[in-house]
Image (cartoon, rainbow, N blue to C red; front, side):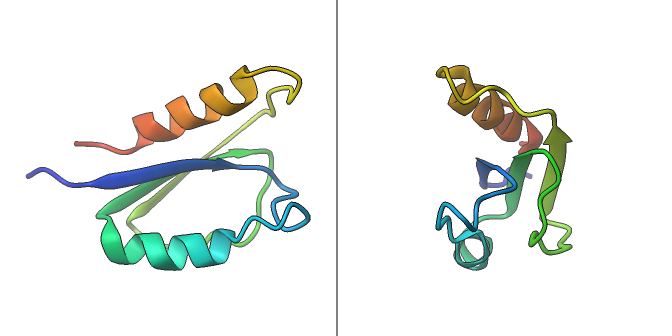
Length: 81
């Protein structure tokens, strides 16, 4: 059976950056079957839900574009068909 997923990466300081992770998850869980999230380090605030897959990894330097592409690619790979 096919499913539809969403994916994102998040940093431990997401609250300081005004990223509304809690609101994004609440909204996204209503629309998608599964969510893949890659965290750059330890991140609090992700609820335990069987539709959410979380992978914690070492941070990638924010000085280059791989900061965005590495986390998104890994998160996309967490979302299974």
